[in-house]
Image 1: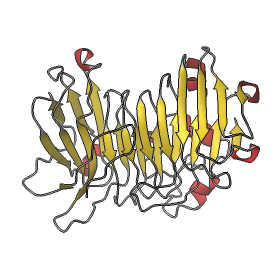
Image 2 (image 1 turned 90 degrees about the vertical axis):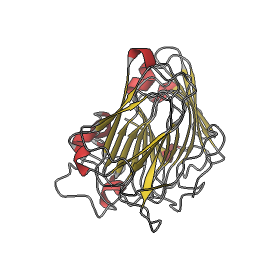
Image 3 (image 1 turned 90 degrees about the horizontal axis):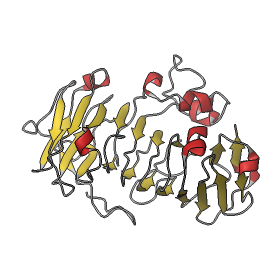
Amino acid sequence: MSFAPPDFVDTTVRQITVEDSLPQPPGGTTIVFTGLSSGTAAITDPNTGTAPVNVLLDPQFDGLPQNLFIAIATAKVELAFVATKASSTLATTGVQIRVGVDEQGNSLQVGGLVIRGKSANGLSISLEGGLATELVLPEKLPPVFPRIFAAGLSAASLASNALASASLQADVPALNTFIELSRGNDYLLGTEFNDGVVLSKGKDVIIGGGGDDVFVADSVISKAKVKLTMDGSGGNAGANGEDDLIIARRAIRRSKKRTKIIIDDFDTARDDIILETSPQRVTGIGTDELTIATKKGGVIEIISGGTPFNQGGIEFV
């Protein structure tokens, strides 16, 4: 079924049946997206984990592109976007990524998925229904993850995940997907497993699933407006989970303007806001709106949909 995302994004992410006739670029392939015509591809080669499929955003598209549909249909896929200098400012909101389904309508495996979207300028991603029972390799995660989790945060994410291999470092979260959002306006519906998401600039809607999810701001997020639903409402069958929103020191140092993160369903008993800064830079503890002063004179606002942010749900590292 198609899922109509709320508020900030006005597109749908369509269902894609993975058939033999569908183009299936192997690992190491570059898909050139000019935006001049629609196209559909399925990623079915697990070797993309060592040789990613790249999507080259060609400067021929003019900001009003046709759609590029990409179905993820195997474990351990890595998908990366590459923008030329000429195309870096053009909108790519016609790019839609979702879990592929077989001819019987069953969602396929997406565990270990890595999407590096930083070079794009707007993505729509639906991982609804995806079977994500593989883990993202620790070396695929950015340095902020082991740095933050070295403090022992979200130990429940490691302890509760039966798939966490003994070979995983104790200070790295057990994540089933890792997604780096683009510089533009993104929509993401996560899995029912453990998702890791790196925030960026833009007007984004993020709907988590039922796992222990980690949402991280680790760079400039000035002018961002993020609507974040942590626990899987809005069409995803997942619910609950112990989720973390992390505002890392690079975001606090570099963001120059006002940023707003609106959380629909913060659960003070299960969820945490982790701030890599000193308490002196934060006001609003005990209310439903935290304000973080950045080093560049900006402000990061974190607004709750009703539950106050009490001291027990906030950690400083």
